[in-house]
Length: 126
Image (cartoon, rainbow, N blue to C red; front, side, top):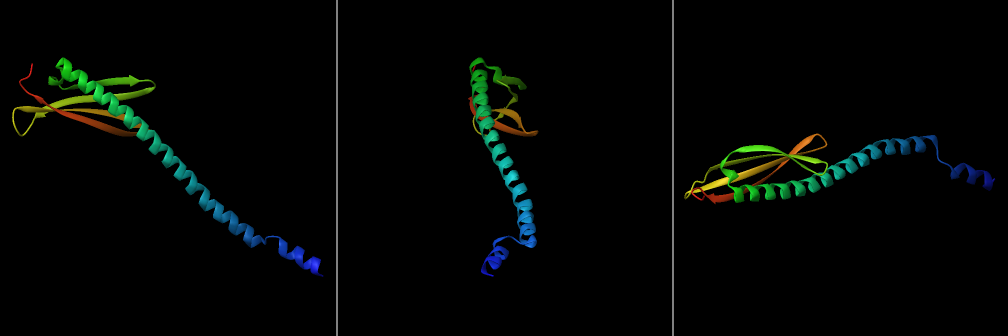
């Protein structure tokens, strides 16, 4: 009789198996969503770093050539990534300075993000 009792107690009941499947049906989608969010966060961070480097390079070039005086924009390809940029300058509240801001926009998983880099320049500098 002891062998029969052990066999009966060693398996899972139908209710236990259904409860385990129900638990997995809840946990797996949550885990997959967490992985997608982590992946998007990593991609956004990497692209943000690239966009900041692009913005810094473009702003430095515009300051050196004097192109910062004309507001405008464009598109720049860096590898397989595309960045839209625009530059604008406006008067600074104090002194005779101009605040020059360059905005770089990039897309990750159909969502737009942006990076802005600014500097102050002498408005009368040639």
